[in-house]
Each structure stands twice: as structure tokens, then as C-alpha cells.
Amino acid sequence: MQFCKVYKDDYILVYYIVSYYISDTSGEQIEMRVEKEGKPDIYAEFILPAYHCHHAYGFTEAELDKIERFLRNNAVSIWDMGREEHHAESIA
View 1 (cartoon, rainbow, N blue to C red):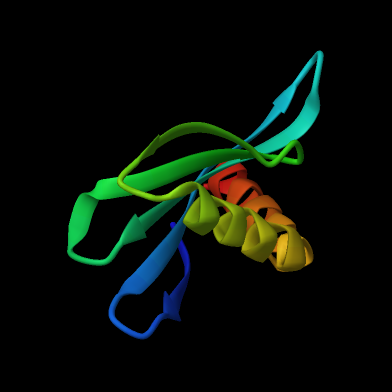
View 2 (cartoon, rainbow, N blue to C red):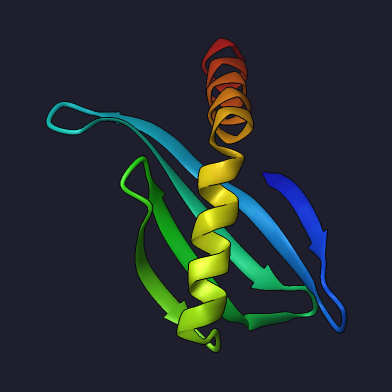
């Protein structure tokens, strides 16, 4: 599910909530994917709430730091949207 688009000077970042799940050992988790629009081979995948980037290709370390900061700054909205989507899927 698409979370949002962030417009940069020369490209657009698209943020996706890939999955929301509850682990017996780690509790609630959300997997996020960020891509440069039109270039899905440039991506980063993060697990929240640890904000751990477990896969990335094509982004610099500085860009990954900015993406992580964006995720942290928008965590409340991300969690709300992830939980709502999970709830809607469990009802259907």
C-alpha cells in the first residue's frame, strides 16, 4: 500500500507499507519500502520500529539517513495506516 510521495528537486521518492505483522518475539512490526519513482531498482527496505534498513540498492548513505529520519518523523501516521490496513484485511 502506498503511504506517500515525497518530491525532491530532481526525483520523487515513493514510500510503501509492504506489511504489518505481529511477532511473538518482537511485537508489532512494519516493513517499509522506498523507491525512486520510475526506478524500482533503486530502493531501500526498512523494518519498524527498529528503523533497520535490511536491503538497499542505489541510495547513498546520506540518502538512507534522510529516509530513516523521514520514517521516524512520520512514525505515528505510518503506524496508524499500517494498523488500519491490517484491521481492514482481517475483516474482509
